[in-house]
Amino acid sequence: MTADLAWGSIREITGEVRSGHVSVVELLEAQLARIERLQPALNAIATLDAGGARLAARAADAALVRGDPVGPLHGIALTIKDSHAVAGVRSTIGVAAAGDRVPAEDGTVAARLRAAGAIILGKTNLASWLYDIQTVSELFGRTNNPWELGRTVGGSSGGSAAAVAAGLSVADVGSDCGGSVRIPASFCGVVGFKPTEGRIPETGHQWTGRPRSHWYMESIGPLARSVEGVERLFSILAGPDGSDWTVSPVPLSLRRPAALRGLRVAVCDALPGQPVQAEVRAAVRRVGEILSAEGAIVEPALPVVDWDAQAALRSRLFRFADQAVVADGGGAGDVTEFFESLDQRSRFVRAWTSFFETWDVLLLPSTNRTAFTHRPNHEPQEIDGALVAYWTPERHTQPANLTGGPAISLPAGLDADGLPIGVQLVGDRWQDERLLAIARSVEPIAGGFLRPPVDG
Image (cartoon, rainbow, N blue to C red):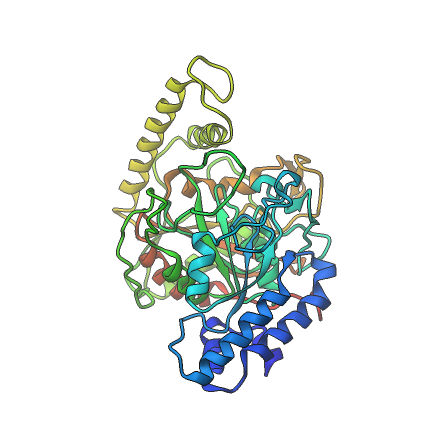
Protein backbone atom coordinates (compact mmCIF):
# COMPACT_ATOMS: atom_id res chain seq x y z
CA MET A 1 0.00 0.00 0.00
CA THR A 2 2.67 2.55 1.00
CA ALA A 3 4.68 1.82 -2.16
CA ASP A 4 1.63 2.52 -4.33
CA LEU A 5 0.93 5.73 -2.44
CA ALA A 6 4.35 7.08 -3.43
CA TRP A 7 2.49 7.96 -6.63
CA GLY A 8 -0.79 8.86 -4.99
CA SER A 9 -2.53 12.22 -5.21
CA ILE A 10 -3.09 14.47 -2.22
CA ARG A 11 -6.73 13.40 -2.19
CA GLU A 12 -5.87 9.69 -2.25
CA ILE A 13 -3.22 9.91 0.44
CA THR A 14 -5.25 12.03 2.86
CA GLY A 15 -8.21 9.70 2.31
CA GLU A 16 -6.16 6.61 3.18
CA VAL A 17 -4.74 8.32 6.28
CA ARG A 18 -8.10 9.52 7.59
CA SER A 19 -9.70 6.14 7.01
CA GLY A 20 -6.96 4.46 9.06
CA HIS A 21 -5.79 2.25 6.17
CA VAL A 22 -2.26 3.57 6.58
CA SER A 23 -0.51 5.65 9.22
CA VAL A 24 1.38 8.86 8.57
CA VAL A 25 4.49 7.25 10.07
CA GLU A 26 4.25 4.31 7.64
CA LEU A 27 3.89 6.66 4.70
CA LEU A 28 6.80 8.78 5.80
CA GLU A 29 9.14 5.84 6.32
CA ALA A 30 8.33 4.50 2.85
CA GLN A 31 9.03 7.95 1.45
CA LEU A 32 12.33 8.26 3.31
CA ALA A 33 13.38 4.84 2.03
CA ARG A 34 12.63 5.95 -1.51
CA ILE A 35 14.66 9.11 -1.00
CA GLU A 36 17.59 7.11 0.36
CA ARG A 37 17.51 4.92 -2.74
CA LEU A 38 17.07 7.60 -5.43
CA GLN A 39 18.62 10.76 -4.01
CA PRO A 40 22.24 9.79 -4.84
CA ALA A 41 21.38 9.58 -8.54
CA LEU A 42 19.04 12.58 -8.70
CA ASN A 43 20.40 15.02 -6.12
CA ALA A 44 16.97 16.63 -5.96
CA ILE A 45 16.93 17.36 -2.22
CA ALA A 46 19.31 19.96 -0.82
CA THR A 47 18.52 19.51 2.88
CA LEU A 48 16.56 16.58 4.33
CA ASP A 49 14.91 17.06 7.73
CA ALA A 50 14.14 13.41 8.49
CA GLY A 51 14.18 13.94 12.25
CA GLY A 52 11.73 16.82 12.18
CA ALA A 53 9.51 14.96 9.72
CA ARG A 54 9.38 11.88 11.96
CA LEU A 55 8.34 13.99 14.95
CA ALA A 56 5.62 15.65 12.88
CA ALA A 57 4.40 12.29 11.53
CA ARG A 58 4.00 10.84 15.03
CA ALA A 59 2.13 13.97 16.11
CA ALA A 60 -0.14 13.68 13.05
CA ASP A 61 -1.05 10.07 13.91
CA ALA A 62 -1.66 11.00 17.53
CA ALA A 63 -4.03 13.79 16.44
CA LEU A 64 -6.11 11.30 14.48
CA VAL A 65 -6.27 8.92 17.45
CA ARG A 66 -7.53 11.78 19.63
CA GLY A 67 -10.09 12.74 17.03
CA ASP A 68 -8.68 16.24 16.63
CA PRO A 69 -9.77 18.34 13.64
CA VAL A 70 -7.25 17.97 10.82
CA GLY A 71 -6.33 20.11 7.87
CA PRO A 72 -6.62 19.43 4.12
CA LEU A 73 -2.96 18.31 3.90
CA HIS A 74 -2.94 16.18 7.03
CA GLY A 75 -0.23 13.54 6.74
CA ILE A 76 1.17 14.80 3.44
CA ALA A 77 4.98 14.91 3.51
CA LEU A 78 6.17 17.35 0.90
CA THR A 79 9.23 19.35 -0.02
CA ILE A 80 9.78 23.04 -0.63
CA LYS A 81 12.25 24.94 -2.79
CA ASP A 82 15.34 26.07 -0.93
CA SER A 83 14.45 29.72 -1.43
CA HIS A 84 11.63 29.55 1.13
CA ALA A 85 12.29 30.09 4.84
CA VAL A 86 11.58 27.07 7.05
CA ALA A 87 12.11 27.48 10.79
CA GLY A 88 15.03 25.47 12.14
CA VAL A 89 16.06 24.18 8.72
CA ARG A 90 19.02 25.40 6.69
CA SER A 91 17.45 27.77 4.17
CA THR A 92 19.60 29.04 1.31
CA ILE A 93 19.26 30.25 -2.25
CA GLY A 94 21.93 27.84 -3.35
CA VAL A 95 24.84 30.17 -2.61
CA ALA A 96 27.70 29.97 -0.14
CA ALA A 97 26.94 33.44 1.23
CA ALA A 98 23.65 32.13 2.66
CA GLY A 99 24.85 28.59 3.33
CA ASP A 100 24.73 28.75 7.14
CA ARG A 101 21.40 30.54 7.41
CA VAL A 102 18.85 28.84 9.65
CA PRO A 103 15.67 30.96 9.98
CA ALA A 104 14.03 31.27 13.36
CA GLU A 105 10.54 31.28 11.87
CA ASP A 106 8.67 29.99 8.85
CA GLY A 107 7.99 32.11 5.83
CA THR A 108 4.34 32.39 4.83
CA VAL A 109 4.48 29.43 2.44
CA ALA A 110 5.92 27.05 5.04
CA ALA A 111 3.60 28.37 7.77
CA ARG A 112 0.48 27.86 5.65
CA LEU A 113 1.54 24.37 4.59
CA ARG A 114 2.07 23.35 8.21
CA ALA A 115 -1.21 24.94 9.30
CA ALA A 116 -2.95 22.80 6.67
CA GLY A 117 -1.40 19.67 8.18
CA ALA A 118 1.55 19.14 5.84
CA ILE A 119 4.91 17.81 6.95
CA ILE A 120 7.84 19.68 5.43
CA LEU A 121 10.21 16.87 4.64
CA GLY A 122 13.07 18.94 3.28
CA LYS A 123 14.32 21.61 0.92
CA THR A 124 14.82 20.97 -2.80
CA ASN A 125 17.81 22.02 -4.88
CA LEU A 126 17.73 25.09 -7.10
CA ALA A 127 19.92 27.13 -9.38
CA SER A 128 22.20 29.44 -7.42
CA TRP A 129 20.56 32.86 -6.96
CA LEU A 130 17.47 31.33 -8.68
CA TYR A 131 19.00 32.24 -12.01
CA ASP A 132 19.41 29.52 -14.64
CA ILE A 133 17.41 27.19 -16.85
CA GLN A 134 19.37 24.32 -15.32
CA THR A 135 19.62 23.42 -11.64
CA VAL A 136 23.23 23.69 -10.55
CA SER A 137 23.93 25.04 -7.07
CA GLU A 138 27.31 26.11 -5.79
CA LEU A 139 26.29 24.58 -2.46
CA PHE A 140 24.58 21.35 -3.49
CA GLY A 141 25.75 20.59 -7.03
CA ARG A 142 23.70 19.48 -10.02
CA THR A 143 20.25 17.87 -10.10
CA ASN A 144 19.66 15.14 -12.71
CA ASN A 145 16.49 14.36 -14.62
CA PRO A 146 14.59 11.21 -13.50
CA TRP A 147 13.77 10.47 -17.14
CA GLU A 148 17.43 10.43 -18.16
CA LEU A 149 20.19 11.29 -15.71
CA GLY A 150 22.31 12.93 -18.39
CA ARG A 151 19.61 15.55 -18.99
CA THR A 152 18.83 18.73 -17.09
CA VAL A 153 15.74 19.15 -14.93
CA GLY A 154 15.44 22.79 -15.93
CA GLY A 155 15.64 25.66 -13.50
CA SER A 156 15.50 27.30 -11.22
CA SER A 157 12.96 25.08 -9.38
CA GLY A 158 14.59 21.94 -10.80
CA GLY A 159 14.93 20.01 -7.56
CA SER A 160 11.23 20.62 -6.95
CA ALA A 161 10.18 19.10 -10.28
CA ALA A 162 12.59 16.16 -10.02
CA ALA A 163 11.44 15.28 -6.50
CA VAL A 164 7.77 15.30 -7.48
CA ALA A 165 8.35 13.40 -10.74
CA ALA A 166 10.41 10.68 -9.04
CA GLY A 167 7.97 10.12 -6.17
CA LEU A 168 10.30 11.58 -3.53
CA SER A 169 7.68 14.17 -2.68
CA VAL A 170 3.93 14.40 -3.15
CA ALA A 171 4.20 18.06 -4.14
CA ASP A 172 6.51 21.05 -3.87
CA VAL A 173 6.37 24.83 -3.91
CA GLY A 174 8.79 26.77 -6.09
CA SER A 175 8.92 30.25 -7.57
CA ASP A 176 8.73 31.61 -11.10
CA CYS A 177 10.15 34.86 -12.48
CA GLY A 178 10.84 33.73 -16.03
CA GLY A 179 9.65 30.14 -16.16
CA SER A 180 11.32 28.70 -13.06
CA VAL A 181 8.31 26.53 -12.21
CA ARG A 182 7.03 25.76 -15.70
CA ILE A 183 10.32 24.90 -17.42
CA PRO A 184 11.27 22.24 -14.81
CA ALA A 185 7.68 20.95 -14.81
CA SER A 186 7.85 20.55 -18.59
CA PHE A 187 11.29 18.89 -18.57
CA CYS A 188 10.33 16.44 -15.79
CA GLY A 189 6.75 15.69 -16.84
CA VAL A 190 4.79 17.16 -13.93
CA VAL A 191 2.26 19.97 -13.52
CA GLY A 192 3.66 23.40 -12.67
CA PHE A 193 1.47 26.45 -11.98
CA LYS A 194 2.51 30.11 -11.97
CA PRO A 195 -0.35 32.09 -10.39
CA THR A 196 -1.12 35.71 -11.08
CA GLU A 197 1.52 38.01 -9.63
CA GLY A 198 0.30 39.03 -6.17
CA ARG A 199 -1.88 36.00 -5.32
CA ILE A 200 0.60 34.23 -2.99
CA PRO A 201 2.73 36.19 -0.48
CA GLU A 202 6.50 36.38 -0.92
CA THR A 203 7.12 36.76 2.83
CA GLY A 204 10.12 34.62 3.74
CA HIS A 205 11.12 33.96 0.13
CA GLN A 206 14.49 34.56 -1.54
CA TRP A 207 16.44 36.00 1.37
CA THR A 208 19.66 37.63 0.14
CA GLY A 209 20.53 39.89 3.06
CA ARG A 210 19.47 42.85 0.93
CA PRO A 211 16.13 44.66 0.47
CA ARG A 212 13.59 42.79 -1.61
CA SER A 213 14.15 43.50 -5.29
CA HIS A 214 11.53 41.35 -7.07
CA TRP A 215 8.42 43.49 -6.69
CA TYR A 216 7.02 42.47 -10.06
CA MET A 217 7.00 39.53 -12.51
CA GLU A 218 7.66 36.90 -9.81
CA SER A 219 5.10 34.42 -8.45
CA ILE A 220 5.24 31.63 -5.90
CA GLY A 221 3.99 28.48 -7.63
CA PRO A 222 3.18 24.86 -6.73
CA LEU A 223 4.24 21.69 -8.55
CA ALA A 224 2.42 18.35 -8.34
CA ARG A 225 1.60 15.33 -10.46
CA SER A 226 -1.90 16.58 -11.27
CA VAL A 227 -3.83 19.80 -11.70
CA GLU A 228 -5.89 18.80 -8.66
CA GLY A 229 -2.68 18.82 -6.63
CA VAL A 230 -1.53 22.30 -7.62
CA GLU A 231 -5.09 23.58 -7.25
CA ARG A 232 -5.21 22.23 -3.69
CA LEU A 233 -1.91 23.92 -2.80
CA PHE A 234 -2.92 27.17 -4.46
CA SER A 235 -6.12 27.30 -2.40
CA ILE A 236 -4.04 26.97 0.77
CA LEU A 237 -1.28 29.41 -0.15
CA ALA A 238 -3.23 32.24 -1.82
CA GLY A 239 -4.33 35.40 -0.06
CA PRO A 240 -2.89 38.27 2.01
CA ASP A 241 -0.73 37.51 5.04
CA GLY A 242 -0.55 40.97 6.60
CA SER A 243 3.11 41.33 5.65
CA ASP A 244 3.39 41.32 1.86
CA TRP A 245 1.32 44.35 0.88
CA THR A 246 1.55 43.49 -2.84
CA VAL A 247 -0.89 40.59 -2.38
CA SER A 248 -4.40 41.57 -3.36
CA PRO A 249 -7.42 40.34 -1.33
CA VAL A 250 -8.92 38.42 -4.25
CA PRO A 251 -11.63 36.02 -2.97
CA LEU A 252 -10.80 32.39 -3.65
CA SER A 253 -13.39 30.83 -5.95
CA LEU A 254 -12.39 27.31 -7.02
CA ARG A 255 -14.52 25.90 -9.83
CA ARG A 256 -15.54 22.61 -11.36
CA PRO A 257 -13.61 21.45 -14.45
CA ALA A 258 -14.55 23.70 -17.36
CA ALA A 259 -16.90 22.58 -20.10
CA LEU A 260 -14.97 22.15 -23.35
CA ARG A 261 -17.87 22.81 -25.70
CA GLY A 262 -17.80 26.48 -26.62
CA LEU A 263 -14.49 27.11 -24.85
CA ARG A 264 -12.55 29.73 -26.83
CA VAL A 265 -8.98 28.43 -27.27
CA ALA A 266 -6.29 30.40 -29.08
CA VAL A 267 -3.48 28.11 -30.17
CA CYS A 268 0.11 28.81 -31.18
CA ASP A 269 2.67 26.06 -31.71
CA ALA A 270 5.62 28.50 -31.73
CA LEU A 271 5.90 32.16 -30.78
CA PRO A 272 7.02 34.49 -33.59
CA GLY A 273 10.70 34.07 -34.43
CA GLN A 274 11.22 31.24 -31.93
CA PRO A 275 12.58 27.82 -32.96
CA VAL A 276 10.58 24.97 -31.43
CA GLN A 277 11.25 21.23 -31.57
CA ALA A 278 8.95 19.62 -34.14
CA GLU A 279 7.62 17.07 -31.63
CA VAL A 280 6.71 19.86 -29.20
CA ARG A 281 4.86 21.75 -31.93
CA ALA A 282 3.04 18.56 -32.89
CA ALA A 283 1.95 18.01 -29.27
CA VAL A 284 0.44 21.49 -29.09
CA ARG A 285 -1.43 20.95 -32.37
CA ARG A 286 -2.63 17.51 -31.21
CA VAL A 287 -4.14 18.96 -28.03
CA GLY A 288 -5.78 21.73 -30.03
CA GLU A 289 -7.27 19.25 -32.49
CA ILE A 290 -8.75 17.12 -29.71
CA LEU A 291 -10.20 20.20 -28.03
CA SER A 292 -11.79 21.18 -31.34
CA ALA A 293 -13.27 17.69 -31.70
CA GLU A 294 -14.73 18.08 -28.20
CA GLY A 295 -16.56 21.22 -29.24
CA ALA A 296 -14.11 23.96 -28.30
CA ILE A 297 -13.60 26.93 -30.63
CA VAL A 298 -9.92 26.53 -31.55
CA GLU A 299 -8.12 28.93 -33.86
CA PRO A 300 -4.56 30.20 -34.34
CA ALA A 301 -4.30 33.53 -32.53
CA LEU A 302 -1.89 35.65 -30.47
CA PRO A 303 -1.98 39.05 -28.78
CA VAL A 304 -1.08 41.89 -31.12
CA VAL A 305 2.27 42.95 -29.66
CA ASP A 306 5.84 43.56 -30.74
CA TRP A 307 7.32 40.26 -29.57
CA ASP A 308 10.94 41.39 -29.79
CA ALA A 309 10.19 44.54 -27.80
CA GLN A 310 8.24 42.52 -25.25
CA ALA A 311 11.18 40.12 -24.73
CA ALA A 312 13.63 43.02 -24.46
CA LEU A 313 11.43 44.74 -21.86
CA ARG A 314 11.21 41.62 -19.74
CA SER A 315 15.02 41.34 -19.76
CA ARG A 316 15.38 45.03 -18.88
CA LEU A 317 12.96 44.81 -15.97
CA PHE A 318 14.67 41.67 -14.72
CA ARG A 319 17.98 43.55 -14.80
CA PHE A 320 16.45 46.37 -12.77
CA ALA A 321 15.24 43.86 -10.19
CA ASP A 322 18.72 42.41 -9.78
CA GLN A 323 20.75 45.61 -9.74
CA ALA A 324 20.45 48.91 -7.93
CA VAL A 325 18.54 51.70 -9.62
CA VAL A 326 20.56 54.92 -9.38
CA ALA A 327 19.51 58.48 -10.09
CA ASP A 328 22.29 59.53 -12.43
CA GLY A 329 23.07 56.55 -14.65
CA GLY A 330 25.23 53.47 -14.12
CA GLY A 331 24.13 50.17 -12.60
CA ALA A 332 21.00 48.77 -14.23
CA GLY A 333 19.92 52.13 -15.62
CA ASP A 334 18.59 55.44 -14.40
CA VAL A 335 15.30 56.21 -12.72
CA THR A 336 13.76 57.62 -15.90
CA GLU A 337 14.47 54.40 -17.80
CA PHE A 338 13.00 52.38 -14.94
CA PHE A 339 9.69 54.25 -14.93
CA GLU A 340 9.52 54.26 -18.71
CA SER A 341 9.94 50.47 -18.57
CA LEU A 342 7.07 50.15 -16.10
CA ASP A 343 4.91 52.31 -18.35
CA GLN A 344 5.78 50.13 -21.33
CA ARG A 345 4.88 47.07 -19.27
CA SER A 346 1.43 48.54 -18.65
CA ARG A 347 0.86 48.83 -22.38
CA PHE A 348 1.75 45.17 -22.90
CA VAL A 349 -0.56 44.16 -20.02
CA ARG A 350 -3.41 46.05 -21.69
CA ALA A 351 -2.74 44.28 -24.99
CA TRP A 352 -2.92 40.86 -23.34
CA THR A 353 -6.03 41.82 -21.36
CA SER A 354 -7.68 42.85 -24.60
CA PHE A 355 -6.72 39.51 -26.15
CA PHE A 356 -8.43 37.61 -23.33
CA GLU A 357 -11.65 39.49 -23.93
CA THR A 358 -11.93 37.32 -27.06
CA TRP A 359 -10.23 34.13 -25.88
CA ASP A 360 -10.62 32.09 -22.70
CA VAL A 361 -7.13 30.61 -22.84
CA LEU A 362 -3.98 30.52 -24.95
CA LEU A 363 -2.47 27.10 -25.71
CA LEU A 364 1.24 27.06 -26.62
CA PRO A 365 4.46 25.16 -25.81
CA SER A 366 5.76 25.31 -22.25
CA THR A 367 9.30 25.37 -23.64
CA ASN A 368 10.82 25.20 -27.09
CA ARG A 369 12.15 21.68 -26.56
CA THR A 370 12.38 18.70 -24.23
CA ALA A 371 15.12 18.42 -21.61
CA PHE A 372 18.59 19.03 -23.04
CA THR A 373 21.84 17.40 -21.95
CA HIS A 374 23.79 18.97 -19.10
CA ARG A 375 26.06 21.73 -20.38
CA PRO A 376 27.90 24.86 -19.24
CA ASN A 377 25.72 27.92 -18.73
CA HIS A 378 25.32 29.90 -21.99
CA GLU A 379 26.48 27.05 -24.24
CA PRO A 380 24.16 26.84 -27.31
CA GLN A 381 21.67 24.01 -27.70
CA GLU A 382 20.52 22.08 -30.73
CA ILE A 383 16.91 21.85 -31.88
CA ASP A 384 16.18 19.56 -34.83
CA GLY A 385 19.73 19.94 -36.09
CA ALA A 386 20.01 23.73 -35.69
CA LEU A 387 21.97 25.57 -32.99
CA VAL A 388 19.96 27.98 -30.83
CA ALA A 389 20.87 30.31 -27.99
CA TYR A 390 21.13 28.85 -24.48
CA TRP A 391 18.29 30.89 -22.97
CA THR A 392 15.64 30.20 -25.63
CA PRO A 393 13.60 27.75 -23.46
CA GLU A 394 12.46 30.81 -21.47
CA ARG A 395 10.93 32.60 -24.45
CA HIS A 396 7.58 30.78 -24.19
CA THR A 397 7.27 31.22 -20.42
CA GLN A 398 8.44 34.83 -20.01
CA PRO A 399 5.37 36.59 -21.50
CA ALA A 400 3.22 35.49 -18.56
CA ASN A 401 5.83 36.85 -16.15
CA LEU A 402 5.94 40.19 -17.93
CA THR A 403 2.16 40.59 -17.85
CA GLY A 404 1.78 38.96 -14.43
CA GLY A 405 -0.96 36.60 -15.62
CA PRO A 406 -1.45 32.95 -14.62
CA ALA A 407 0.07 30.09 -16.63
CA ILE A 408 0.29 26.33 -16.16
CA SER A 409 2.45 23.62 -17.74
CA LEU A 410 0.83 20.21 -18.34
CA PRO A 411 2.49 16.91 -19.32
CA ALA A 412 1.72 16.06 -22.96
CA GLY A 413 3.36 12.75 -23.76
CA LEU A 414 6.94 11.87 -24.69
CA ASP A 415 9.22 12.64 -27.60
CA ALA A 416 11.11 10.03 -29.65
CA ASP A 417 13.87 9.96 -27.02
CA GLY A 418 11.36 9.14 -24.29
CA LEU A 419 11.51 12.62 -22.71
CA PRO A 420 8.47 14.53 -21.42
CA ILE A 421 6.82 17.23 -23.52
CA GLY A 422 5.01 20.11 -21.84
CA VAL A 423 2.17 22.24 -23.16
CA GLN A 424 1.22 25.52 -21.54
CA LEU A 425 -2.09 27.23 -20.88
CA VAL A 426 -2.07 30.99 -20.23
CA GLY A 427 -5.02 32.93 -18.86
CA ASP A 428 -6.01 36.48 -18.01
CA ARG A 429 -4.75 38.27 -14.90
CA TRP A 430 -6.64 37.36 -11.70
CA GLN A 431 -8.49 34.52 -13.47
CA ASP A 432 -6.40 31.80 -11.78
CA GLU A 433 -9.32 29.65 -10.73
CA ARG A 434 -10.80 29.84 -14.22
CA LEU A 435 -7.46 28.74 -15.73
CA LEU A 436 -7.19 25.85 -13.26
CA ALA A 437 -10.72 24.72 -14.14
CA ILE A 438 -9.78 24.73 -17.83
CA ALA A 439 -6.52 22.90 -17.08
CA ARG A 440 -8.38 20.13 -15.26
CA SER A 441 -10.41 19.50 -18.42
CA VAL A 442 -7.39 19.73 -20.73
CA GLU A 443 -5.14 17.55 -18.55
CA PRO A 444 -6.47 14.13 -19.69
CA ILE A 445 -6.50 15.32 -23.30
CA ALA A 446 -2.86 16.38 -23.07
CA GLY A 447 -1.87 13.05 -21.55
CA GLY A 448 -1.29 13.46 -17.82
CA PHE A 449 1.56 12.34 -15.59
CA LEU A 450 3.68 9.31 -16.47
CA ARG A 451 6.12 7.60 -14.11
CA PRO A 452 9.76 8.17 -15.07
CA PRO A 453 12.13 5.20 -15.44
CA VAL A 454 14.61 6.35 -12.79
CA ASP A 455 14.05 3.30 -10.60
CA GLY A 456 12.71 0.89 -13.18
